[in-house]
Amino acid sequence: MDVALGGTFDPVHDGHRRLFERAFELGDVTVGLTSDELAPKTRHVERRVRAFDERKAALEDELESIAADYDREFEIRRLDGPTGIATEPQFDYLVVSPETKDGGERINEIRRERGHDPLEVIVVPHLRADDGDIISSTRIVMGEIDEHGNVLEGADSETDRSE
Image (cartoon, rainbow, N blue to C red):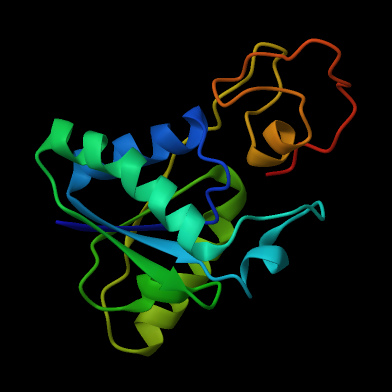
C-alpha cells in the first residue's frame, strides 16, 4: 500500500512522529514537504520557517529510523500546492491531523474528478503537551515547549496553538 502525507515539519516533534509511525504502519510513505513558497501560506501564525533543503535533511533523518522499524520505504517530494501529491493515482491512504481533515476531503473530490479511487483518510489525533494543549511547531518556535511537549520554564501559555 502507498501512503501520502504532507506538511512543513519545522521543527519535527512527537506529534509529527505519531503521524509518521501511523503512515509506516499502513505502507510505504511519500511525504509532501511544503516548498519555501507554500510553507508561509500554511501558517496560522507568522513565523520563520527554515529553508526547504534544511527541513528536508532533518525530515530524512527522522524518517530513516522509523521506516527501518517498519521495514518500509519512503520518499520526500516538494509540495507546491495544498492538494499536492495525494491527488496522484498511486496512493491508497492519506494520513492527516485533525485540522487537515477537510483538505483530505478536497483531495478525494479532485481524485474522483480525475477518475481515481478516493483515498482512505486516516486522522491521527493530536498529541498533547504536559500543559494539555497540543504539541505544535509554532509552540516550539515560540519557546513554550520542546519537541516532546515538555513545558519550558518561563513559557507564556497564551500563545496561539493552532498548528
